[in-house]
Picture 1 (cartoon, helix red, strand yellow):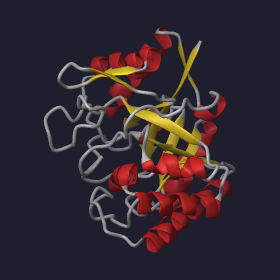
Picture 2 (cartoon, rainbow, N blue to C red; picture 1 turned 45 degrees about the horizontal axis):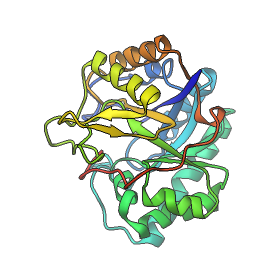
Picture 3 (cartoon, rainbow, N blue to C red; picture 1 turned 90 degrees about the horizontal axis):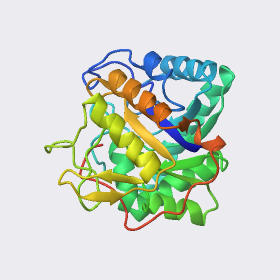
Length: 273
């Protein structure tokens, strides 16, 4: 049986970016890993505790979702942060979420940068090192979730950290394997059946069809759904049903064996995830 992790960015709170308020509870019944906002772009101590407790109750793995210090921009603006400051900011977020998770009986298993920081560490060596150094300082057992071929994965692997590659079910891909920037046509996949077909294609065939029809290779142990994509719950429901029908077992990646080696060039996109 094929195995895949299904992750979503949760605990970000309701706001102008969230078109479907309070989708977290529904998504937690469908995904196997939750990337929990750690306060710098969304969420707070209350949402962290509630999300971690709900994830624990449903057998969903808890991950930290750190970002630039940018609540106003929801962490989707690239900031020119000194590496030493970024290291401290990421360590702050990881430590805070780990402490809150412990307070409700959960534990953090992985880290996935959010938004503009996620994009930056695909190519930016200094910022990638800052993130990895923060992980090493707080908990070297954390896996680093990110794009195949990214700098953060190369740095993390060299430092002895586990890396896990992911692909995006609800985002458009360009023919070179990068994500279509959010401000361009084709950036989002909002049709539940189209997203479901993509998820099966990614999990079973290891490919995705780009916006121009090109078939692009993706090596992913985890598939990502965004809680702020229009119709997120309907998309997640269709994706989970399609994976089940295709004989793909959805479970946290820590129970799914090791990650395949990264393939090809780095994957990324323009500003904002």
